[in-house]
Image 1 (cartoon, rainbow, N blue to C red):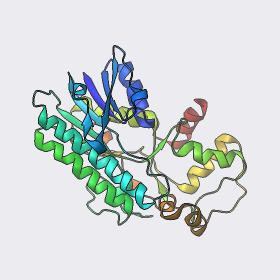
Image 2: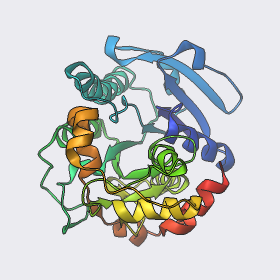
Image 3: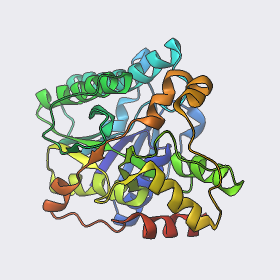
Amino acid sequence: MRVLITGATGLIGKEIVRLCGREGIDVHYLTTSHSKIKYTEKCKGFYWNPGKEEIATECLEGVDAIINLAGAPIARRWTAQHKKRILDSRVKSLQLLDKTLENNREHHVRMLVSASAIGIYPDSLTHYYDEEEEEVDNSFPGKVIREWEAAADRLGKQGLEVAKVRIGLVLSPDGGALPQMAKPVRYFAGAAFGSGQQWQSWIHITDLARIFLFLLEKEMPGIFNGVAPNPVTNEKLTREIAKKLEKPLILPNIPRFVMRGLLGEMSYLLFSGQRVSSRKITDMGFSFRYSSLSPALDNLFDRE
């Protein structure tokens, strides 16, 4: 099998590329940076620029499936300019893939597995969300994810099977949320946000990468939650990190107004939460290596 990966040089993409190498899957990847283009026997890079509708069409040669991870980071201050970048980077990348496939009918691509996010579900302390939920969170992330998924679905009109992975809080020692949460804890400044009762539906980065490859193997379309089976509250996550680092939590919880002043509208991400089910993917036969938080953190901190 050969897969084409967008966003392959990002946190999740690197882990998927690593697993592809282990599983004997050839990789083509698209990057907006010429300096990140490399060629090996099993992994080849190609340039693209979705904003300018530029793409090296040779990237499709021999490709059976596409993994789409392209998108600007959402965890930055939401200025009007960055909001546009967040949305455009997700939608325009899929639009360019759609157009490229349309103009290259000889391709052999059968499936698209596209990243999405659990932020599409409404913020709630009590609801337990599965993939059948139709209500969309009335927030900027909710709007972005709705349009992101719609753009992915449009590739289905070309006969591709389309799967969307709604990703939760990704835990990795190499970037993302975990190092940012661990840093203040190490310096005795760790604390939960707000009430601390907002849900954190997390996933170990290796399990997330395995889900993408599992869906390719099964050729199963649809929506799938990319979360571990046991979500925790923000307070529980903070306490578990402190426990692993053997550091006390001595500060009170951080009020919403403080983070709003520091981060603006983007602080919404810290105080909202969704408790999300992974039952659909496990019912299909997927087995998590890290289904509970404590052993997941043990592994991640050991990898630092």
